[in-house]
Length: 401
Image (tube, rainbow, N blue to C red; front, top):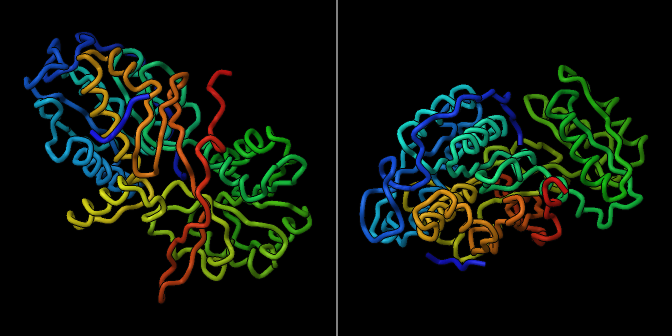
């Protein structure tokens, strides 16, 4: 293994109160089996992600990245010390109730490693199961900050909301004394982004205000004028849905881009053509796009996916990292869940985005982020790297402190 030791949809959170019996703290093909030796029974790993439902595209990118990462981390063998890693995939359907039911079933069958999901609500519910049943859980692209530090058995293989918002702040340098206006729909998603910007950039001294737009609005000129009247130093846009094109057109026509940087998150490849005439003017914070990193691990991932007829996308690294973490935990964990947890805490390793660290105190994944822009390539819009943001610059505070 090539390593060294050292946004958009949130599902409702399902209650999960039943603790399943028969979950011994050893890792193997069956309950009570031991790990950490040469050969032996396969190590069973359960993967829960959206194969259908609103997050299916994210699930597909995560799954493809995981397969590439497993190939990379095991040098193409799919095994650790001669023991096969037996992967079982299941569809969470973007539904916490479905995910918890399937997670309980896996746990009841003796699975001690569970990973996956792009939904923060599902990840939160599965983290409860991890703590109650003392299994290792590695969440996927789910971004909610609350997943970090939620318990000692839960890790994450992707970025979190704090890292997104902190990345946006890098477009204005030191945010102290600057005015940041959040332009968002007046719904749970928009309010959550406003709260996040207040917590992150407001916590660094920025003055944060919101221009909140009714979810059913179709005319955006008055709201664009409100933005201009607020005299922002930075506009942070949090928007989703069919009205996106009309909203971006209104910001362009009213000259908002001439007054301040307008920042939003760059989504998956399917969204690159969704910004209309505003495309070249938007400043994008970014978790990942194909070619952003230029690392050896990224080259290996892209080559593997190309061979499989697939392409790298926004959440491919999350799957790749999950595979690396699982392989490392099996190899170094001494055959117990507690050993696997200890092996991951404080681990620094090279991955798609470069050097990553699993922070020991709360299991945050410390990682670089990106600034990007869209440029025309024939009739298409494609991302281009503006800058790589150092991992420590956007590192979240230790959870609970």
